[in-house]
Every structure is written in C-alpha cells, then in structure tokens.
Length: 104
Ligand code: HEC
Image (cartoon, rainbow, N blue to C red):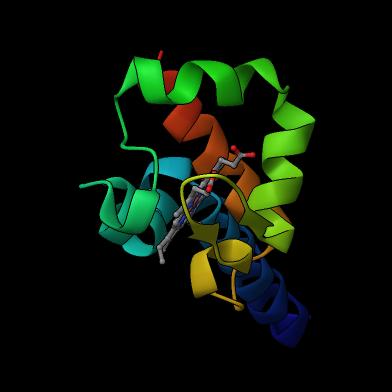
C-alpha cells in the first residue's frame, strides 16, 4: 500500500510538471523568442499586430500546423517546432496561442 501511495504521488508530480511545460509563455520564451522576439530571418515579431494580422486570418489550425510541421513562406523559413523536436504538439500549440494573444 505504501508503495502504491509513492507511485501515485510521483504520477501526480509528473502530471503537474506536464501542465507547467504546456505553459505557452514558458515554451515561447525558451523555444520561439530567439527568432520571434526580434524578427530574426523574416520571423514575424511578437507583438507586431501588422505582421501577424494576415497570418492570424489564416486560422489557428493552419498556424498550429505550420508551427508543428514547419513552414516556408514569403519572408523566411519556420523550422518544425522552431527546431525543438522534443516539444509536444500541445506545447507548440500553447506557444502559438501565446503569440496570437500577444500580437493582435
Ligand atoms: C529559427 C527561427 C525560428 C524559431 C526558433 C521559431 N520560428 Fe516561427 N517562424 C520563423 C520564420 C522565419 C517565420 C516566417 C515564415 C514565412 O512566413 O516566411 C515563422 C512563422 C511562424 C508562424 C506563422 C506561420 C504562418 O502560417 O504564417 C507561427 C505560428 C510560428 N512561426 C510559431 C512559432 C513557434 C510557436 C515557435 C516556438 C516553438 C517558433 N515559431 C519558433 C522562424 C522561427
């Protein structure tokens, strides 16, 4: 029984950590800001509503897909998951949500 409790609390801790990792802001800061913070290599800059307007108009699902699978557009190349292959799709989606919320 004691062993079960230990495993259960370890699982609860892992679940809590998983939630923290899906935090869009944290993922953005770690994995996306290098390009999107300053607009490196044609990346639309975080907070630049004009740069994001037409992209946001394509719809969230398209932006999720492009962020996860990569996207070659008119201004540059968005690497799949920003080059962070270890990110889950949900983490990338949360980061996209964070960018959208901060850029309109
Ligand atoms: C190595 C630089 C780089 C990194 C790191 C990066 N991006 Fe990008 N991203 C770009 C560039 C460049 C574009 C513009 C591509 C174009 O439209 O020509 C872009 C475009 C996008 C777009 C718009 C796609 C569209 O359809 O218009 C989204 C959404 C996006 N990035 C999300 C992210 C997220 C989320 C992360 C972090 C997980 C991230 N990016 C990390 C360079 C980067």
